Image (cartoon, rainbow, N blue to C red):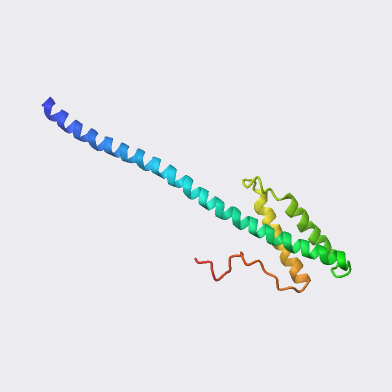
Length: 137
């Protein structure tokens, strides 16, 4: 009777051993592929944010140049908003992407940009924005 129990016990342990080995192998493979995928997503996201910040920096520089040429070209209220955008761009935590304030700053930059463009009656648009037609539900 012990011999029969040993046969079944080894069969049960064999299944358990294969299950554990498969789990461990899958976990290790998942760690490797997860790190690689995370790196790719991080690079893509970082590039997109840098591109958007560069776009806003260029706009602020052009607007500041126009103000230096003709200070009355842009109202004081809009000049103040441009200055706020400039300060946000300077204080953006580029080297600290984990900071949650970065997301808030991008949102604030977007709003200020739209407000300035609307006030100046400009149809300037950052092409990196996701379009509503591109978003799928």
